[in-house]
Length: 227
Image (spheres, rainbow, N blue to C red):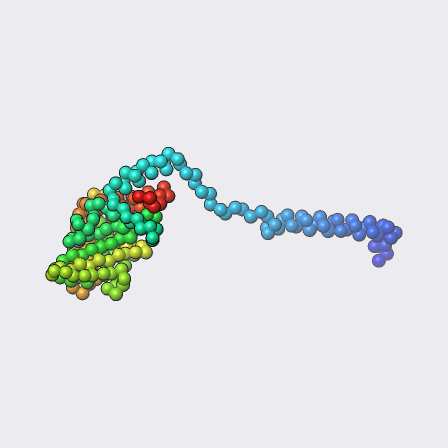
């Protein structure tokens, strides 16, 4: 106690001493705060958005206008949704045939549709595609699913499955990038056997065009609400 008294001296000295001690303690605390990781400014983790290239955007819009001429388009003002159909795959040319078709709406959303036609039921539940050595299979869509439909008339039968929600399992992209390689198709999963055929060049090209159309709609922000 005597040492402390000598250090501070008088009452006035005590006050000054206490003030000095507080300054020293405050300085240490301030120094520790600066070293504390929690006090450092967090690094920005926000991803930078790539600037739009005006030249590319204009080129995409021009290509979109060009490729749209290969499709018919129907827009429903009540549902605020429109669908593109390749002119080479209108019902008049595909109804009585085996076909794969890519549906595209005005927002660029796509899904694959298959259609079987014959004199006997197949009751298929999936589509398999072979391109070169690569084999792709859709999900199985059972007969009770709303996306699996069938009907008959005049001794002929039709079966059609829509592979929505990416249940095509990569078939769309594979056909779009198939080049000149033939696309072999099998309708399978049914109790009455399978149906094998090679996709026509016309239908193969229609899927390629629809895939490109979808990407261009997304890239340009086209809404398809006017035509």
